Image 1 (cartoon, rainbow over the protein chains, first blue to last red):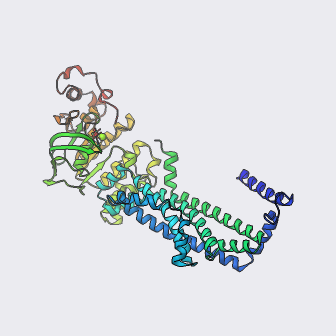
Image 2 (image 1 turned 30 degrees about the vertical axis):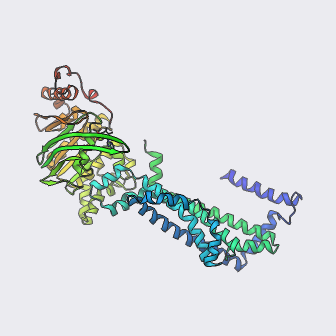
Image 3 (image 1 turned 180 degrees about the vertical axis):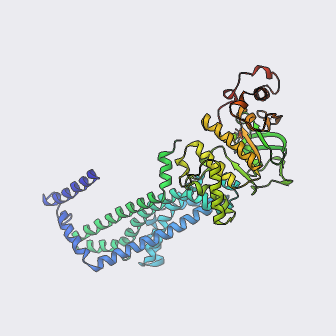
Length: 252
Length: 271
Ligand SMILES: Nc1ncnc2c1ncn2[C@@H]1O[C@H](COP(=O)(O)OP(=O)(O)O)[C@@H](O)[C@H]1O
Ligand SMILES: [Mg+2]
């Protein structure tokens, strides 16, 4: 923690020093303190908060839809025989398509509305969840499965009591990755197509020469990413206390 | 009453073909404790899975009380060899034992009573709140036994349940199983690769041949019902039976006289 904080401090000092020493023009890189001033200005501007709200709405809604869809599709694909083979080539084809390549499609369909953001966020985040769920379901222990069957658990009860708990650590990983990707996509789409949000505000700041504000907003986006990742890890750790312990304590 | 007739099981898949069981025929009367002994890889687990309805036989049939077994059934419980993987690590001990009862829609209070009774019976009355992975191997296997007991089966199948616990724990668990069997009066099919264990526990011992697997012989264990780790094992009848079974496994029935010094160590130790 201390070395981490030290690293940040060094970065801030460098950021301050480089424009002050004239190594880079402060028109392109305003000093750190100037950026902080701009950040203070942003924080008192209601328009900033509404932009932040828009971005978070797109992110959360998109992530929720992608998670629900990914988990559902994953469980169905993995538990219905032959569906996995049937879908694997499709998955392998669709998954590598960079979501930003779908931006024109989104504009065509929804213009600059929230739905454009959602389309791309969901598309990008969905695969992260789906792939992890598929791995997770594959990880079900045949002995656990046999045990459940021997003791009279039907298909539905086995999904609930065996498959789901086994897959949960993978699902958590998938959601954490999806959360990061979803934020990237939300900001990107706002930036590129001008849907309301932080990305759009960054773009406006840039075109109107408000360079310190632009950096302040980038800083906010970065902090958001860090917060989301930390939060996701926290939830993961709480939900999977048994899992971690299994890994760290039980002898092989 | 459990009846196995002409049971054959061939695993087929990815070009490989394994005949795990060639031709097994035997029967267990209700309330009997019968041990199945055979070398590792001879198909003991396969046999249990077929009896449990987890695996469809290639040929032959399994009938329980006159009804053909086509899938898992309520009156039958299994204790698996891999107890660590058979207990769910995401559930506490009580939840593990309780799950099959919940599945049967048994009322909550009855369930709770049954669970604590079963845990008491295996001497684990005070670890209900623990997770399985917090317990030793022997304790985990007790939990698995408690889960089977709470299920109140007519038929209990046990697959080398003590292969991976230390000698002292193993002796305790053997006495536990025999004690529970005598009190509860269920039918028990106990699979092991350990000849001593088979003779010590069983009323009869079914000796399986190495692959291609058939029932080589059924040995009736003429020992008193009251068994004791020290005196029973020192009994000449016990050592005689043990030699006979070992001889059957080794030479297919001949030369049973050269095996007198073979004991647990001679019965194979892999699982
Ligand atoms: N699912 C399976 N697929 C293919 N072969 C199997 C499978 N399970 C067991 N076998 C094979 O069947 C034989 C008997 O296995 P098993 O019943 O586990 O023996 P045991 O329990 O006596 O050690 C072994 O040769 C094993 O490799
Ligand atoms: Mg086995």
